[in-house]
Image (cartoon, rainbow, N blue to C red; front, side, top):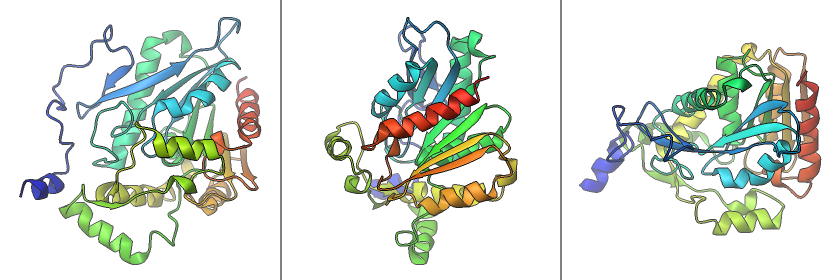
Amino acid sequence: MGCCSCCIDENHDLKYATPDREPPDPELFPHYLQNKQGLWLHFTEWAPPRDVPNVRGVLFVVSGLGEHTARYGGVGRYFSREGYHVFCMDNQGAGASEGERLYVVDFEDFVDDIFLFRRRVFSLYPEYAKLPRFLLGHSMGGLIATHVSLRDPTSFAGVVLSGPALEPDPKIATPFKRWLVGVLSSCAPKFGVDSIDPKLASTNRQVVELMEQDPVYFKVKLTTRWAKTMLDAMESVWEHVERATYPLLIVHGAKDALCPVSGSRRLFSCVPTTDKQLIEYPGLGHEVLTEVRWREVLGDILKFLNAHCQ
């Protein structure tokens, strides 16, 4: 009976996570913030090295499903060395952030957390308020970043989407599964329905090995509520796509087996902005930021950032 009640309760089952919770002490926990649900969210930053005279801009990185900030260490160091102060947060339910693993009550909670994160960063670095700010979202983080930028389209000097989750794979999200997830999301929101095979993520063997053995990268089954709210978030993108007036770069592996490149192609054709670019990389899989040709991909992103950093 206890197990059933746990599945039915849609809120995060954490003893201390309540909206009236005392926020983390900034001196003891400088890289944590508290969201509206009372969850403590962890973030990491990569500052430009001392030999870089000026900070060119601020780059917010939005991670994907079950990821954590350490997975973006190479990305953060790359762009920080080019003069960008990079910030990345563990989404609720992932990494060092609180929340039940791979679970969210509503997808908009992810989006709200990014706005809160942005406010926290500029409270720590008020001198950055006038610098160009950029958004880079990967996979599920690409979907989150899309919703963030559509909600506030004039806030960013440019948006970069990496293998964004904009359309479900029809072979996986069959009509029956979508119906079933919709039903279970209401009565058993935390019920596990599926998991992701790390071997589908990349052609880079080291990336796959780390995903399979990383003790922080969670491999529990995806919950029905997460699946339902993800599908809803994908559909709602197309209802608001006319707001995408900002500079946009989409990078996507042509062999992506997790997030169909068709979603990126569709977004590229639908957004009204004329400052847009879609780069497809032949032979690369889903994790384009850490793929075997990662220097090429990050170099293309850097060109975009520099071009919009005036």
